[in-house]
Structures are given as C-alpha cells and as structure tokens.
Length: 363
Image (tube, rainbow, N blue to C red; front, side, top):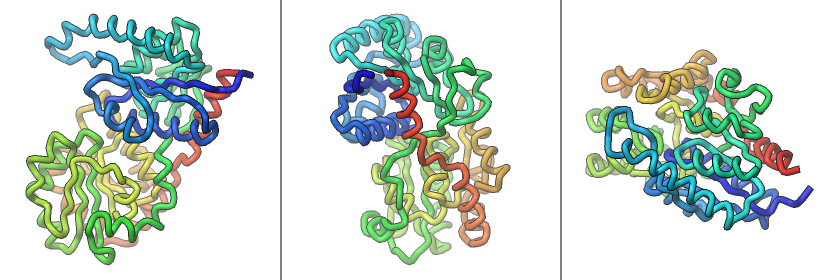
C-alpha cells in the first residue's frame, strides 16, 4: 500500500457540512501529520471563511444550488456546473489527491464527479437521516458511503454503506474543565445558570424573533443567555445585549459555550445534535420546518422518543418556547435525565471510523 500523502475534501454551505469535514481532516492529520489536505468549497459560502480559520487551505468553485422558483441563478446553473467541473479537473490535475471525500453541499458534486471520472477513489459522508440531493447523485460512483443513521439503504446502495455517526470537533472533549475559562471569555457569572441558544451556522428566524420579544423574561428569572444569531440577524438584535445577555453573530469557541451552558436550545440539524450528545447537556430542540422531508423533526423525535431531549414545534415557539426554557431550568431532575440519555447518542469515534474507511480505500 502506498502511504497516504494527499487528500481532497469537498462540500459545505452550512456548518452541518463544514464541521464534520474539518473533524475528518483533523483526525487525518492526527494520524498522518505530514498529510497534505486541500478543501474545495463554493465561492461566497461560509466554508471559504471557516475552513481557513480551522487551519486548512481551500479552493472555491462557482457553484450554487437550484432554487425552487425561476430565477437568474437557475438559468445560470448549467454554466456553473460546467465551469465547476472544468475547474475541478484543473484542481485535481494540479493537486493529484489519492482520494476525494465529499460531505454534501454544492461544491462536492462537481469535484467528486470529476474525481470519479479520473478513477480517483471517492468516499462520501451523509450527516442526516434524509439524504441530500448531491450525495444521492454521487452515490452511484462513490466507493464508500459513511452515514450517521440506520436505514439509509433506501437512499444509497446497501453494499457501500458504513454506519459511523457524525464526526465532531476535537475541542469538544473534556469541556467540564473549561467552565471557568468560559465564564471569563463570555463575561458571565460562573455561579448563575446559563441558557445557550444556537440557531445553526446561518441563524434561525424563529429563535431570534422569540428572543427579541421575550429574552427579558429569562433575565428577570435570574438566568444568563448566550445567543448566537447568525450574521444576517445580528444587526437587528445586538442592542439587546446587556450584563446577562451575550449576543454573537457566530461563536467560534463552541467548546466554551457548551461548557458554560446549563441548558441548550437548538435547531435539530444532525451535526448540532451530534455535538450536544457528546457534551451531554440538557437539550430543547426547535426543528426547522424549512428542510427537505422535514428531516429535522425526524432527527428531534429520535431523541424525544428516548427521553433524550425536549421539543417545541417551530409554529409554537413564539408562544411557548421561553416558558418551556424556564420550566426546564427549574427542573433539575429532568435536566439530569435528559443529560444522561442524550449521551447514548454520542459517537465519539466517528472521525476515527471514517478515517479507517479512507485508509482501507487506498490499499
């Protein structure tokens, strides 16, 4: 077997694609320190900022998804695909990877298609219980498909599937030891209870509007709030920040945020759930209704049915979410039960298992 020297990783669009990709890259570097890794993303998408911050190089493709209605972007889509496949070929010819890894998102389509045509082994990772369009299309040529949920043979060839779970960031290990540092970082009282609101990497309109109206209820009840808004919403809410409410467009130090939180309120994206399962914090989910096949509700119900999380429907959140938060904050017994049960969903070795599949493929 030739030693693994060069790997290319493609995908992105949201944190749910980016952070598993970064986790895979980190595990690869941990096992093979001199490994050369190149990311390929979509120009203008968040991976072009987040991947370099994680310490990896990235190239951008001119690619985007199809919109549900007729738009200029849709008319230009065929040209974007042709341009991206052409540039992918240039990148592959120059970088010469031994394997190409796709994590979903627009950019992984043309890059892994071009890699497959060239005979480069390909592996894809699907984070959700409902497979994304790009990964379904790529699965016909992929050599191996790593998934986070059982039953994915309804989307992918069964003989290619490996159940690994979702890889999470390495800095989420041992967060209990970071609580004092977290208190200093956020400027919050170590001895007061804290609620963390995260609406995904792009923000969540319902969570933001609910907090705009009622965040004072949480302060009046004696609780502290860490609130990630997403960059599109930050300017609308930043003036609500005070001594007990800390507001950020994006939180890079999620290990510290998780460490300080007594309760977490989140959308039900697969990667967010995987992270919170690893840190074992009481969780209240508000699934986004704006996703394919309502898969976030399915993600949430998998936990709710095992007493591993609570759920508030998006349509009810503006009326009931804050009261549900206060009720959970006051119920230590329920917090303990949720915390213990969600740990059963953790997959701390997912990145290692995926890297093992990568190494097997290049033999």
